[in-house]
Amino acid sequence: MSSSSTMTPDTTRIEKDSMGEMPVPADVLYGASTQRAVLNFPISGRPVPSEVILAFARLKAAAARSNQKLGKLEDTKADAIVEACDQILAGLGDRGGIARHFPVDIFQTGSGTSTNMNTNEVVSNLVCLKHGAPVGSSKDPAYLENDYAVHPNDHVNMGQSSNDTFPTAMHIAAAVEIQSKLLPAVRTLAEALDEKAKAWDSIVKIGRTHLQDATPIRLGQEFSGYASQMHHAADRLDRALATLSELPIGGTAVGTGINTHPDFSRLVCDQLTESTGVQFREAENHFEAQHAKDGFVEVSGLLKTIAVSLSKIANDIRWLGSGPRCGIGELKLPAVQPGSSIMPGKVNPVICEAVVMAACQVIGNDAAVTTGGLGGVGSLLDLNVAMPMMAANVLDSIQILSGSCTTLNEKLIQGLEPDEERCAELIEGSLAMCTSLVPVIGYDASAKLAYQAYAEGKTVRELALEQGLLDADRLNELLDPRSMTEPGE
Image (cartoon, rainbow, N blue to C red; front, side):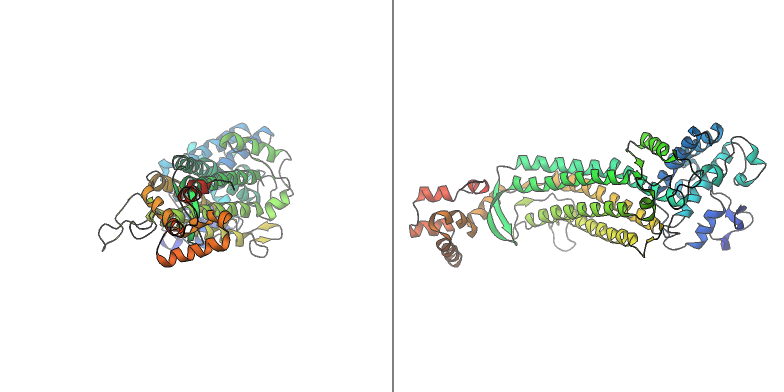
């Protein structure tokens, strides 16, 4: 957004707020308060995420309808606000998109006051344009005499404060994104892993603990573990939705609800539930909901846990697909792109690497969110003042995890194949096969057999037959890999 130093009388208009006059770009829908924020916070060049802006539009519409039901806002004004909010939700495509009109940096006033006022100003100016009045007319007493005219503070912000609207909007935004994007992506990945687990249940391979050979395990069993991780991830997201659905709206400045109707919060939550499908409810304690952001920290932690789960799945597949000839090679990874600019024919586990990097970023985001919730950093007495940053990081994590789940499924899991011959070969050569002999010949004799087999480059089966420890039939029975993957004595 242009600074005042590049503005000229031909490209600006003069708007007013409580601090006086302010030149504002002529072609934008915001006003003086927003322009002050643009000039005050030229920090990252990254505006508050559009998901938060859309959440604000939903919230302002819900607040207007609620105030209308409570008899505090005239029908014409409520209708005008809702119509303007619908334009924002549609993306303001005919006016150059949302970004031009919501330019305030993420790193702004920690309560999100600038974004709340940005929304109030855009809504009121959209109403002006709807009725043929110049942008900025919402502060003109003559214009405000019209029954449809809305003032950014008196009408759009009625019964609200930045201190309860921004934390409410960040909850709405995160909940909507989880419900519409991340949760479906996680469930789809879980289903894909379930399918692999069932399809590969008969494939026996060697297990590994400490990256060393262990007793046999079925490939389907390993993948059932990955599938379970994603089913648990879906459960975690359900818990996140339950946490996010508790909204601070109605607490106004410090949680006391000054200047709002006691039924306002409940009505707003009902309106938001209807418009989003998320079961929103009024905060049990408005002082906790506004003074701290523990719930948001909790949600970020749940997202971090899902990132850790994805990193485990991606890294295991990367190991099992290493090779193709000089690594483990039990899995055949789909070739999605050339792996080297110097080594012809090389294919790398790029999808695994991308997902692991994404997990690192989500973990970093969580560290920022956690810090933002700390007492003395973000949570100060009766308000948290790190909310825009916290919102941006949680929404970034949701987007990253959604994309990671979808990419992992479509670009890796769907095309993944087992190398059954390699699985059988590695099992036969494993020294851990002697574990099943322990109940028959004892631990010490089994350990001696393993060490000797390793030293002589023989399999456990070969050496046991040579030494006549057991007859061939009994040995084959004990060394049956499939039997080692099931409970029993």
